[in-house]
Length: 213
Image 1 (cartoon, rainbow, N blue to C red):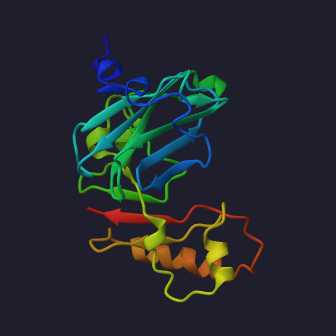
Image 2 (cartoon, rainbow, N blue to C red):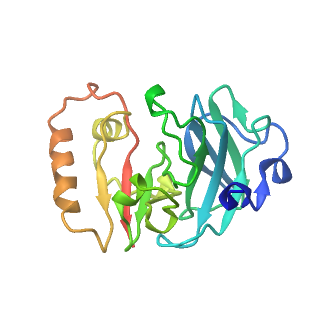
């Protein structure tokens, strides 16, 4: 028996009523009462959302197993979790087919960041290569971070640049204090590339904030 597959603190049906969460918008949506999480996966068979108290945490502080009846709409898996606030670290464990020949490499032992999130946290023990090795990578993975977009300082930038940076294909990275070596150089390169694109030619992408532990 795999202990990870039986480690959920809660099933979604224990804390949520039918219709309590929404498939749209994708990613984390912060509200005064909690956060709605939504991700897309056409082939997932089980989805857990895992919460952490620190970027280098070896184990989740809370695990919620999504109910495929209550928390799935078509290929969208979603859940509203009351009481979650900005700054909460989280990730996903997703189970499904593992046949590489079919283009699927699901591995329930790996912690995944939210592909639709706006912020990630990188711990001191982050190890990218651990994601490709067998076994649990909880202690060395990046963690997604619930961001409060209403508090972001645009520093007086005009509206067209805001639209450009919040599109779906271009990304600007903001590096917080304690940044990883070389991160600011990479961010400047992205910024320079985006600055040369005329307005309206980059249809949207999530703004990405990187926080170093």
